[in-house]
Amino acid sequence: MTTQHSHASDRELDGLAARLGEDGVAVVGGSVTDLAGVTRGKYVPTRRLPAFVRAGMGASPSWSVFCVDSGIAFTPSLGVAGDLRIRIDPDALRVIDDGVAWAPGELHDQAGEPVDLCTRALLGRTEERVRAAGRAALVGVELECTVLAPDGNHATTAPWSPYGIRTSLDLAPFLVDLARTAERVGLPVEQLHTEYGHDQLEVSLAPLAPVAAADAVVLTRVVLGRVAARHGLAISFSPVPFAGEAGNGAHLHLSLADADGPLFSGGDGPHGLTAAGGSAIAGILATLPELLGLYAGSALSAARLRPGNWAGAAACWGLENREAAVRFIAGTPGNPHGANVELKVVDPSANPYLAVTAMLGSAERGVAAGLALPDEVPDDPSGLDVELPSLPTDQVAAIDALEASAAAAELLGAPIVEGLVAVRRHEIRTFGDLPLEETTARLRLAWSC
Image (cartoon, rainbow, N blue to C red; front, top):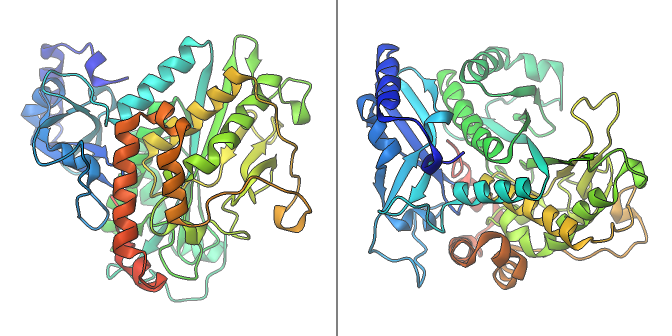
């Protein structure tokens, strides 16, 4: 799962590098995703792949607190001194472009141990704890993005038809290339379609183990960016790429099972929920007000999280309820993957490893505590006479809640919370007083790969 546990021998790594070289791969890249949700990387000549795995390539600790505008949000714990190593996972290596291979990386100290700020290692530990508790988790992702012209404006000017066959077929060469590339690199794409927003595209990924699912998010973003460039296009993963238009989500789907079977089906609770499944949903909802600054804490996130946007702005759950933060999908013949829950508030500005960690860890907290399932909200919450837990309504409130959260400290650790708060408060200082139109323009490509 993580590079420190890789059992590949030096001879096997030398052989992998040789095979890649014979196939025309000239450089190998390794990436980490920082606390602002931006993916950053380094490259080595292919012959140096073994060194990238074993020793790693140098990276300042400040990489973790780089900001969306290239600023650095130094903290009392993170300054100009020190050095880390990015070590890549050879088991997850993929050839992503002509002559270029990529693998996800982890941050290690000079002694070779993962550091507290390594989000991939954190998710790996969370996955292992779930497994040790006798449960298995799978995570699926719906990743929304906006297709742009090279100058950053809309790719098309014709009237947009949401989910339209015309709008999708106009992008047919791009979609064909995307599907073929995804198959070649082993991305489990299940669905492609144009979405509600102008030039908006959604890519749905099949369920995977948690670390593999977060890796797939990063790889999908990279592939989308490279394929788009081949067609004279660009891709925006901004939560709100254009003021007043549809926002982009990065919805997470979670399923859990134990020795007795799935937690979200086969029980005597609502829609077949087991008692443990109900507690998992309760756990996700219980931490949501505190963790919103992780799931959707950027300078643009609050503009997306509004009623009527199908972004899950209400802290409740409901069967197929797209206005609820937690949408429940029952196990039916129309759902071949089985019952699962979708967390709709997550947007692409979130670090995917942290978002999966938070959702999975919150579900586990709920199961361990035996939390009671809240009453279901079966329809649009804004039209019902129900009192729901309130969510922070702006970035300042969301980050303040995250900083004060005992759940965040438990699930993420103090160093990650400190760094995450620092980078988001940098955004507040930099963009908080700007018109939304200016912020969307400046950050339109901030999360692109």
